Length: 285
Image 1: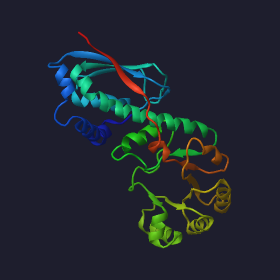
Image 2: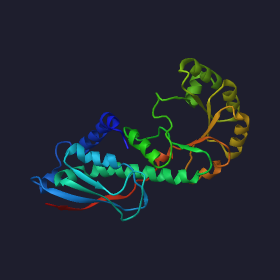
Image 3: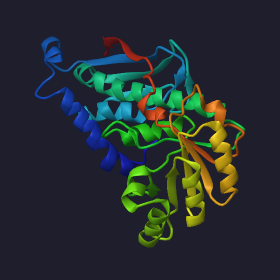
Image 4: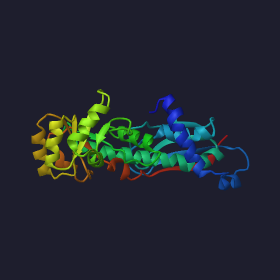
């Protein structure tokens, strides 16, 4: 759950922007059928099994439209939910419920989909000692929601943004003139409290990264056979991360290799949404 300061400063502006995208001047459909305030109630229903995530954001959508909305949740973020389960009842001005419905569900469906997909991969790594990481391959302006969803699903966050840490990728290395140069330049520039991670694509780059004193070496798009050789070369001199087209279908290949981390952009860019609906809207006293 987001703390109050994070919610107000970093979450609310994105939600308001999403609401403005959906309502540029008025909600014509709602105003056509609801000419005045009328209190109503609607059910939040899960339509498939998964991990629910984003309930605070879901609620905040309605609260930003009308602070008088009341939501009775039967579940919490991180809970396993099943098809047909009643997860909440939302009460308030029917105009608010109708106008906020799509935006609230868009966040909840997307965040729950990421949490569910992440959970399915994290479960495959249980007992291996490998930490599952996300990447910066997130939807623009949705990173704060998507990285939170990864954590709820049992994964861990890599860098939040470019300010967070030093990760020297192929183009950084190309710009610097090689692995050794890139690492030496990073050590000279970056504060000592920051680890230096370098992405390598072949065994020569692995050797260069080890000699230059990289803290973390990312083995990118290597076959299991080449990864084994790379791990032998590193020999405990740096932490090891595996990356490159890692999905639920192929993650088994890295278990048992003795690496520390595996990062997967698929957690955020390829997770399908969870099917969730607001149903049975009706007036109440």
